[in-house]
Amino acid sequence: MIDTSDFKKGVCFVYKDEPCIIVDYTVSTPTARGGNTIFKTKLRNLKTGQLYNDSIRSGEKYGEVDMERHGASYLYNDGSRWYFMDDESFEQFDLGKDEMGGDEMYIVDGLEGIQAMLIDGNVVSVELPFSVILEVTECDPTIKGASAQAQLKPAVCETGLGIQVPPYVEAGTRIKVDTRDGKFLEREK
Image 1 (tube, one colour):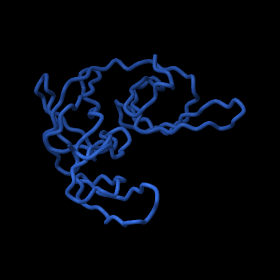
Image 2 (cartoon, one colour):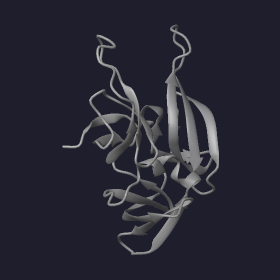
Image 3 (cartoon, helix red, strand yellow):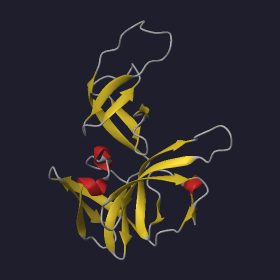
């Protein structure tokens, strides 16, 4: 069983008798006087691709999805679809932007650690590694002495992903980015 305390991006469970994956979620506590925590979730139905925006109270339990995971390799994209190959069966499959759920912003050539998620033998989604290396292509200049606190500045990566980075990052720097929340982790070593 999947409990609401297990919720995070990429978790799959049975919701309304359909297999769903958490695309995004936020947590809110309505009152300080014993109100239940509410998880505002954005779920994608793994069979139909339909998106649900639902609020789920804490403590609710859901069944696990009967799913297989196979290693996969990224091949290429044609602007609207991303093509992969199953490392076990060597069959190629493609996913559209809706099926990728925003993960397309983290996919670059040579990316390793991708998992294809299969339900009833059909690929429904891919799971990316927890972090990827991206190159910063555009970055605002650093303003010296602007604040006593550490400041972040906007940057754009090679895939078009917008991210907040520390002031020492410049265009051309390769950085490690968390694929779960899109945050800067560190410079590539």
